[in-house]
Amino acid sequence: MTKADKSNQIVNAMTIDVEDYFHVAAFSGVVNPSHWESRYPLRVETNTQRILKMLNEHGVKATFFVLGWVAQQCPAIVRAIVREGHEVASHGYLHQPANRQSQEEFYNDIASSKHLIEDISGQQVMGYRAPSFSIDTSNPWAFEVLRSLGFVYSSSTYPVKHDLYGTPDWPRFKHVREEGLIEVPIPTFNKLGRNIPIGGGGFFRLYPYWLSRRLINAFIADTQQPYSFYFHPWEIDPRQPRIMGISAKSRLRHYLNLNSMESKIHRLLADFNWSTMRNVYQLNGFNHDAGISNPEAIKERLSILG
Image (cartoon, rainbow, N blue to C red; front, side):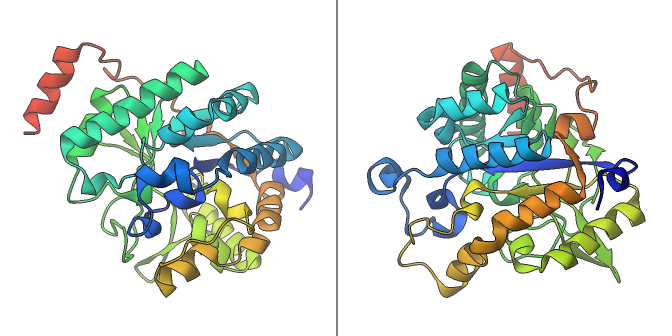
């Protein structure tokens, strides 16, 4: 596809969830967060630098949902993301699923991540993505917590049926929640009433590239909506240390087609127009009473949630 072909295309959102290989939820049963520093060599900084180089080669700006723990361990990579003109957002602090936390635990995790990333980057953190898309019917109160902390948008729901996550009956497109927060779901392609996952990650590694490209084009043509894509730094790292003691399903999901992921990302960056979540979904101009910095006001909002 030539640059002329791309000139009339819709602009889509490129996003990266900045976490390391040992952070993934599938490994939570065998990897203890207390051992992250001592037992698992960091690879996220080098891999994120590689991603920054890829984006620069294609002239693409993206949104990086940074794990707070990573920001604390690797502040230089957060500064590099901002220096290159990208958007930083929050992926929480300890990569704990939102639907496995109490409201207080969730608040503390998100608040610490947001403040840390803002302090390091010097950039307002407007967006949040829950680990494993873990805002669902069990914890809709999470949107109110996010709003109370000054977030403008979330990209934390995936309207598909999946054994680990999914809100198949929730909206498929950008919408303003009743709490006043914008939610941008991970994209799906609807076929015969069923939502097919096409947002990136493991499904992108599973599908042949021609199929992903066809589904993305079909999504854009059918919906006239921008598309958003996500992946992780560890997905372009086939030499990452192997985690022992995990199930065969988790092993297949995590290590599938890591060797081909980087070349597929290059093709994706070349075939479509990309920008940040802020720009694509016009989030800069969205206004609500998000800047709630008064602790008493936050307590009052959260007390309503019980």
